Image 1: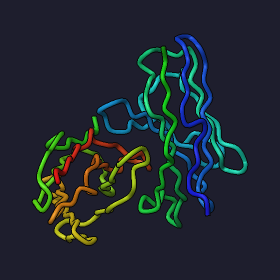
Image 2 (image 1 turned 120 degrees about the vertical axis):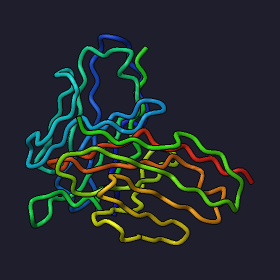
Image 3 (image 1 turned 90 degrees about the vertical axis):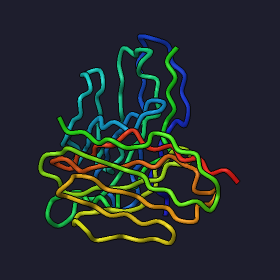
Image 4 (image 1 turned 60 degrees about the vertical axis):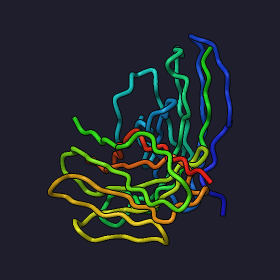
Length: 118
Length: 110
Protein backbone atom coordinates (compact mmCIF):
# COMPACT_ATOMS: atom_id res chain seq x y z
CA UNK A 1 0.00 0.00 0.00
CA UNK A 2 1.69 3.19 -1.19
CA UNK A 3 1.77 6.04 1.24
CA UNK A 4 1.59 9.69 0.26
CA UNK A 5 3.65 10.30 -2.87
CA UNK A 6 4.88 13.67 -4.06
CA UNK A 7 6.56 14.73 -7.27
CA UNK A 8 9.01 15.99 -8.17
CA UNK A 9 11.39 15.49 -5.23
CA UNK A 10 13.55 18.46 -6.17
CA UNK A 11 12.96 21.47 -8.37
CA UNK A 12 14.99 24.53 -9.29
CA UNK A 13 13.23 27.59 -10.71
CA UNK A 14 14.07 31.24 -11.27
CA UNK A 15 12.24 34.28 -9.94
CA UNK A 16 9.02 35.06 -11.75
CA UNK A 17 8.47 31.53 -13.02
CA UNK A 18 5.51 29.34 -12.17
CA UNK A 19 5.65 25.86 -10.60
CA UNK A 20 3.26 22.93 -10.13
CA UNK A 21 3.78 20.34 -7.42
CA UNK A 22 1.83 17.08 -7.27
CA UNK A 23 0.57 14.85 -4.50
CA UNK A 24 -1.15 11.47 -4.44
CA UNK A 25 -2.78 10.69 -1.10
CA UNK A 26 -2.55 7.44 0.76
CA UNK A 27 -5.07 4.87 -0.36
CA UNK A 28 -8.41 5.42 1.38
CA UNK A 29 -7.73 9.08 2.16
CA UNK A 30 -9.90 11.85 0.71
CA UNK A 31 -8.38 15.02 2.21
CA UNK A 32 -5.13 16.66 1.16
CA UNK A 33 -3.35 19.47 2.99
CA UNK A 34 -0.32 21.39 1.78
CA UNK A 35 2.42 22.84 3.99
CA UNK A 36 5.45 25.02 3.37
CA UNK A 37 8.50 24.35 5.54
CA UNK A 38 11.27 26.93 5.29
CA UNK A 39 14.73 26.06 6.62
CA UNK A 40 14.74 25.99 10.42
CA UNK A 41 10.98 26.46 10.66
CA UNK A 42 8.02 24.22 11.33
CA UNK A 43 5.59 23.44 8.51
CA UNK A 44 3.16 26.28 7.75
CA UNK A 45 -0.35 25.44 6.59
CA UNK A 46 -1.11 26.62 3.05
CA UNK A 47 -4.52 25.11 2.33
CA UNK A 48 -6.60 21.95 2.47
CA UNK A 49 -8.71 20.25 -0.20
CA UNK A 50 -11.69 18.00 0.35
CA UNK A 51 -14.30 16.94 -2.22
CA UNK A 52 -12.38 18.89 -4.87
CA UNK A 53 -12.84 22.18 -3.02
CA UNK A 54 -10.56 24.35 -0.92
CA UNK A 55 -11.83 23.79 2.59
CA UNK A 56 -9.37 25.80 4.67
CA UNK A 57 -6.65 28.30 3.84
CA UNK A 58 -3.69 29.62 5.77
CA UNK A 59 -2.09 33.03 5.51
CA UNK A 60 -0.65 32.69 2.00
CA UNK A 61 -1.12 35.07 -0.96
CA UNK A 62 -3.24 34.29 -4.00
CA UNK A 63 -0.07 33.33 -5.89
CA UNK A 64 -0.55 29.99 -4.14
CA UNK A 65 -3.42 28.03 -5.62
CA UNK A 66 -4.43 24.42 -5.72
CA UNK A 67 -6.66 21.80 -7.15
CA UNK A 68 -8.00 18.41 -6.17
CA UNK A 69 -9.00 15.83 -8.74
CA UNK A 70 -11.80 13.24 -8.56
CA UNK A 71 -9.23 10.55 -7.64
CA UNK A 72 -8.28 12.74 -4.59
CA UNK A 73 -4.83 13.62 -5.91
CA UNK A 74 -3.88 17.26 -5.67
CA UNK A 75 -1.71 19.96 -7.20
CA UNK A 76 -0.14 23.04 -5.66
CA UNK A 77 0.57 25.90 -8.06
CA UNK A 78 2.76 28.87 -7.25
CA UNK A 79 2.89 31.82 -9.65
CA UNK A 80 5.42 34.63 -9.92
CA UNK A 81 7.97 32.82 -7.77
CA UNK A 82 9.96 34.82 -5.23
CA UNK A 83 13.25 33.93 -3.60
CA UNK A 84 11.35 33.52 -0.33
CA UNK A 85 9.28 30.70 -1.81
CA UNK A 86 12.31 28.43 -1.53
CA UNK A 87 11.27 25.72 0.91
CA UNK A 88 10.25 22.12 1.39
CA UNK A 89 6.62 21.69 0.34
CA UNK A 90 4.89 18.90 2.20
CA UNK A 91 1.63 17.23 1.33
CA UNK A 92 -0.37 15.42 4.01
CA UNK A 93 -3.41 13.23 3.54
CA UNK A 94 -6.12 12.00 5.86
CA UNK A 95 -9.79 11.16 5.77
CA UNK A 96 -12.79 12.88 7.21
CA UNK A 97 -14.27 10.85 10.04
CA UNK A 98 -17.88 10.15 10.85
CA UNK A 99 -18.30 13.45 12.69
CA UNK A 100 -17.06 15.38 9.69
CA UNK A 101 -13.68 16.15 11.26
CA UNK A 102 -10.32 15.12 9.89
CA UNK A 103 -8.84 12.08 11.63
CA UNK A 104 -5.54 13.57 12.75
CA UNK A 105 -4.16 10.34 14.13
CA UNK A 106 -4.17 9.12 10.58
CA UNK A 107 -2.54 12.20 9.02
CA UNK A 108 0.27 10.95 6.78
CA UNK A 109 2.93 13.14 5.23
CA UNK A 110 4.76 12.70 1.95
CA UNK A 111 8.51 13.22 1.68
CA UNK A 112 8.03 16.62 0.14
CA UNK A 113 9.26 18.61 -2.83
CA UNK A 114 12.35 20.71 -2.22
CA UNK A 115 11.89 23.91 -4.24
CA UNK A 116 14.81 26.25 -4.81
CA UNK A 117 14.14 29.64 -6.39
CA UNK A 118 17.21 31.37 -7.81
CA UNK B 1 -3.62 34.76 16.50
CA UNK B 2 -3.22 31.02 17.02
CA UNK B 3 0.34 30.01 17.85
CA UNK B 4 2.48 27.12 19.03
CA UNK B 5 5.82 27.72 20.77
CA UNK B 6 8.37 24.98 21.31
CA UNK B 7 11.42 25.01 23.56
CA UNK B 8 14.25 24.54 23.45
CA UNK B 9 14.79 25.08 19.73
CA UNK B 10 17.94 23.00 19.85
CA UNK B 11 19.29 20.38 22.27
CA UNK B 12 22.45 18.27 22.35
CA UNK B 13 22.71 15.43 24.87
CA UNK B 14 24.65 12.19 25.29
CA UNK B 15 23.27 8.75 24.60
CA UNK B 16 21.44 7.42 27.65
CA UNK B 17 20.30 10.83 28.87
CA UNK B 18 16.64 11.71 29.39
CA UNK B 19 15.24 14.73 27.57
CA UNK B 20 12.08 16.78 27.99
CA UNK B 21 10.74 18.84 25.11
CA UNK B 22 8.21 21.58 25.74
CA UNK B 23 5.28 22.89 23.76
CA UNK B 24 2.96 25.74 24.72
CA UNK B 25 0.03 26.91 22.67
CA UNK B 26 -2.67 29.54 22.24
CA UNK B 27 -5.46 28.26 20.04
CA UNK B 28 -9.17 29.00 20.04
CA UNK B 29 -11.43 25.96 20.17
CA UNK B 30 -8.63 23.50 20.84
CA UNK B 31 -9.33 19.97 19.67
CA UNK B 32 -6.05 18.08 19.82
CA UNK B 33 -2.29 18.40 20.20
CA UNK B 34 0.02 16.28 18.08
CA UNK B 35 3.69 15.34 18.24
CA UNK B 36 5.68 14.38 15.16
CA UNK B 37 9.26 13.23 14.54
CA UNK B 38 10.96 14.57 11.42
CA UNK B 39 14.19 12.79 10.54
CA UNK B 40 14.70 13.59 6.89
CA UNK B 41 11.69 14.97 5.11
CA UNK B 42 8.34 13.40 6.04
CA UNK B 43 7.17 14.03 9.63
CA UNK B 44 5.99 10.81 11.24
CA UNK B 45 3.20 10.70 13.81
CA UNK B 46 4.07 10.05 17.46
CA UNK B 47 1.11 11.01 19.66
CA UNK B 48 -2.25 12.72 19.64
CA UNK B 49 -3.41 14.21 22.94
CA UNK B 50 -6.90 15.45 23.65
CA UNK B 51 -7.40 15.07 27.41
CA UNK B 52 -5.47 16.67 30.28
CA UNK B 53 -3.35 14.56 32.58
CA UNK B 54 -3.49 11.32 30.64
CA UNK B 55 0.00 10.14 29.69
CA UNK B 56 0.51 8.47 26.36
CA UNK B 57 3.47 6.10 26.05
CA UNK B 58 5.24 4.39 23.21
CA UNK B 59 8.41 2.60 24.24
CA UNK B 60 10.86 5.16 25.59
CA UNK B 61 8.68 8.09 24.50
CA UNK B 62 5.85 9.55 26.53
CA UNK B 63 3.76 12.71 26.40
CA UNK B 64 1.22 14.50 28.52
CA UNK B 65 -1.08 17.47 28.03
CA UNK B 66 -2.14 20.21 30.46
CA UNK B 67 -5.15 21.99 29.00
CA UNK B 68 -5.39 24.41 31.92
CA UNK B 69 -1.83 25.70 31.52
CA UNK B 70 -1.91 25.18 27.72
CA UNK B 71 1.22 23.11 27.33
CA UNK B 72 2.49 19.64 26.62
CA UNK B 73 5.77 17.84 27.18
CA UNK B 74 7.42 15.03 25.28
CA UNK B 75 9.84 12.87 27.27
CA UNK B 76 12.42 10.55 25.81
CA UNK B 77 14.24 8.28 28.26
CA UNK B 78 17.51 6.39 27.66
CA UNK B 79 18.10 8.31 24.44
CA UNK B 80 19.77 6.63 21.47
CA UNK B 81 21.50 8.12 18.44
CA UNK B 82 18.47 7.12 16.37
CA UNK B 83 16.40 9.59 18.36
CA UNK B 84 18.27 12.45 16.67
CA UNK B 85 15.63 14.37 14.72
CA UNK B 86 13.43 17.43 14.73
CA UNK B 87 10.45 17.01 17.04
CA UNK B 88 7.40 18.97 15.96
CA UNK B 89 4.47 19.94 18.13
CA UNK B 90 1.22 20.87 16.41
CA UNK B 91 -2.22 21.93 17.53
CA UNK B 92 -5.46 21.53 15.68
CA UNK B 93 -7.26 24.82 15.16
CA UNK B 94 -10.76 25.03 13.74
CA UNK B 95 -11.59 23.55 11.37
CA UNK B 96 -9.08 20.85 10.59
CA UNK B 97 -6.22 23.33 10.29
CA UNK B 98 -3.06 22.14 12.02
CA UNK B 99 -0.60 24.74 13.30
CA UNK B 100 2.99 23.66 13.89
CA UNK B 101 5.66 25.04 16.16
CA UNK B 102 9.18 25.62 14.88
CA UNK B 103 10.33 22.31 16.26
CA UNK B 104 13.09 21.19 18.60
CA UNK B 105 16.24 19.95 16.87
CA UNK B 106 17.56 17.11 19.05
CA UNK B 107 21.05 15.70 18.55
CA UNK B 108 22.19 12.65 20.50
CA UNK B 109 25.95 12.20 20.86
CA UNK B 110 27.26 8.61 21.04
